[in-house]
Length: 335
Picture 1 (cartoon, rainbow, N blue to C red):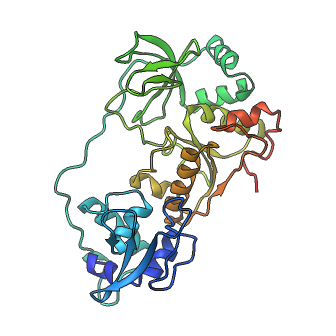
Picture 2: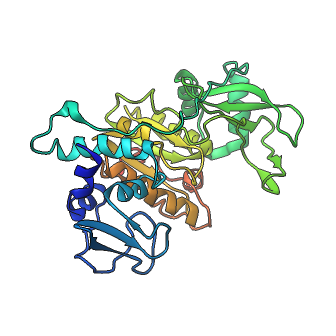
Picture 3: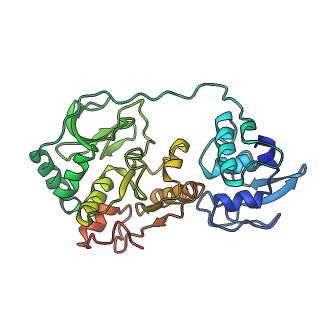
């Protein structure tokens, strides 16, 4: 499989492998499947003997099958790393073209080495029962002691100290996983951090120069057949309350921000698994659910998006759903 092989494939076949929405006929305007459009904004056209996606809202306006893969996975349209991931994916989905062997994959080398992410090396200790009771007082009905105990057992919840540019050192709850690629800090007293960068207080912060897009728990639950995908450390705690109550053999993965895409190197961990997504009830959360769903479908996953019934407030989340005294039974496997 070479870049030319992938570019030469009919785009409707690549479209069908990437998205659930049907591919349009040539020159027929349709909704872009990689963003929540309200009106048709793209079409497939033929130029120079190959298919191109023409998107009227983005630059570049025309992309080939490699560019379509990039937009489905929120990757740069131009770049050696994007081409590499696209070729590996296409070889897995479509197989080797006639007359070429699997050992003849032509993958262009990136012009520069990818950034090497270091693991967090700060001091963290396991929470005591008093620490967990403090967290229960802060979060109320959004968490349970059994759920927090399970998080501690799985190495996802710790106690540490953190200092930001705009605040003094604070004792805090730290959410991370075995890789320590990213850490999410929430203040021990339950108060927000002051973040002058955003100009407003925020519930959680992470250390600089760490991977804020890394899905917490992804490597720890790679062998599980069923996964819950939540947004933020708050929903991570709520999800574990449900897992603990049901005694379910299900992993909980947390994306630390709705603006993040699932890193391409993590997508294979989801391959052919059952995945439930629990997005926040705001535009950013719904856009994230659409983006993550599109990415997961490239790995043979048909995710279910949990609608949080009864949660009406803007930005409502899984914790708000639990406040409504809903039974946690069935929350892990809603269909």
